[in-house]
Image (cartoon, rainbow, N blue to C red; front, side):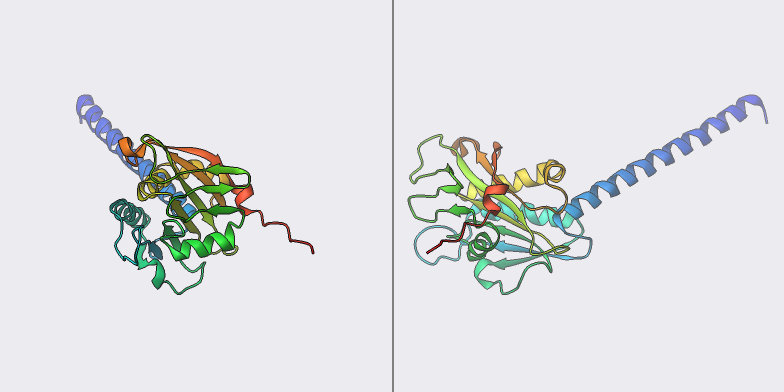
Length: 244
C-alpha cells in the first residue's frame, strides 16, 4: 500500500472514530438532560402523569375549558411525552385519588379547580387566592398580587407556580393557579423553559412556590412572563394556633 493510500485510509478511520465519539457524547448529554428533566418532574419513563383540567370561569356550572387552558394542557402533554411518560387527563371534579403515586399537574385557580383548592389548603396554608368574581388577588403573608375585574388596559396578571410533595420519595404535584387562563398558559411555558433554573435553586425534589407576573397579557398573551417573587417560606408556613 502506497503512503498516499495509507494516509487516506488513516484519515477515514480517524474521521469515523471522531464522528462516533461525537455521536456518543451527544447521546450521553441528551440522556443526562432527559434524566434531569424526569427527576425534576417525577416522571420516569413508562410512568403515568395526571393532568387535572379546570372548568372555564364564569357564572353557572359550565364544563367548558378556556382556550388558553386547553393550549396549556397540550403543552403539558408534550412535556410528559418528552419524558417518556403517559398523560391521564381528568376533570377537576372527577379526581378521587391521593398524592404521591403519580406526578400531577393541577391547572387553574381554586374557583375553577376544586383539587387546586384542596392542595392549597393542605400544602400551602400561608397563601390565599381570592376566588370572587371581582377580586382575584393572590396573597402571601403581607404581600399581595392583585387583579380586579374588569382589569385595566395593560395591567399585569399573576400566577402561582408551585411544586409540593406528599412525602419523601413520592411523585410531585405541580400547581399552576393563575388569575386568568392566559396566566395559566404563561406559567406552563415558564415551567417548561426554566425548570433547570428552578432545579438549581430548589433542588430536584424540593417544595417551592413562586409568583409569576404576566406582562400586559392583552397585548402579549402568555409570551412575556417574569418571576415576581419567591414566596416558598411564606406559603408553606402554617398560621400560629389561636390561643383562647
